[in-house]
Length: 90
Image (tube, rainbow, N blue to C red):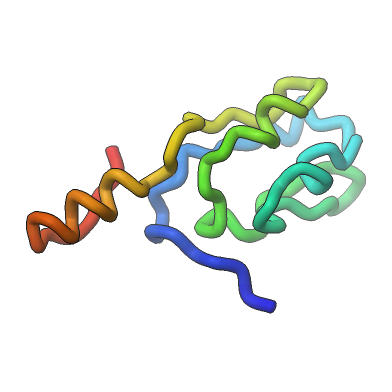
């Protein structure tokens, strides 16, 4: 099943693989399957599927993940629809 994609290349999700210990918590809590494990460390495989919920950051014991949590780009999508402009986050 395809996961939903939000706006391309706008998510604030960042992963520091040097801090990752491969605990798999990000895989367990991410509702959109953004992460996979490669070479015993997490990697971002579906970045545009990130809805910026913050679950991965809150559950990462090594603080390897950062994301500006909130409503993701929902506000930008709504504003773009209301104004007739291309949605843009940030």
